[in-house]
Length: 388
Image (cartoon, rainbow, N blue to C red; front, side):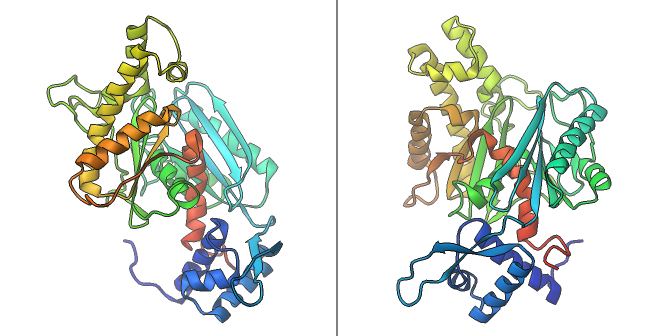
């Protein structure tokens, strides 16, 4: 059962994690900024920063910070000696890893692109990639994992993704913890992506946001009041199986007329090939979207997505919508069309315009989100001993 109270040690980790988060994500860069942002006293901030410097987490910067009045404050930056994080992304067609610092600057990334048929092959690929990261960096403090879903976050388990050769019930968090003896944090790939965007990307100034990614499937990540949402059973939200037509085609999930059937990239590419008579990749079709035949198919895709987004918006009343993966290729006129229609017909918050943007990290949001699963655990004070 999740504990509700906080003891003195918990409170310390929480405050220290918050201070580190504000520095690492660029929201603060001096002791004065930190005191204002946290509400902690200047002596308390000075003590925390002093400990961070002693632990090689933070160092003072030579870069001058201009103050409005009085002395220019001394700048603070994340130390190059600070522990690093590793992120692992599991997709249907590949496994990828990234080594990053607490500013989410990428130090190294590697991937293996091949179809995976068994759980043993999956774990072999993951371990091979992780071993490469540990040859690069010995000072890794935490590993984050992001995976296609469905996933059970509480159990750290990849449940039963479609089109994944019946690979199911993989307790990947436990397997990686046992091999590398490090804390491991796990989530759905799109829940991980929305976390990366919230901490470092286009969602930095928002507390409520919806991220939707389109590729072979359609997934989402949701943040409400600054926190990702999961069910009490540990499951992440899904958007691809919202029904647009209860009399429509039967989806692989068993429902009819699911959004995924109308907007996933493979389906849209098939329709584009039929409409144009050309055998091209999805990316290449988007590059010629001014072609009337291509535009007609794409507009239908955009409008189907918009219809689903309006329904979700009327439930969440979120502040921001982010579009990721293959949506990042779409020309701006499609993004603007979605934004205009959502704001025209949404039921609540009529006086507040909801922006629709592409993800800042484009197609890398999921991979960097994997690393952010680990980084966020540090910020939340969830790794005992990290600040000791």
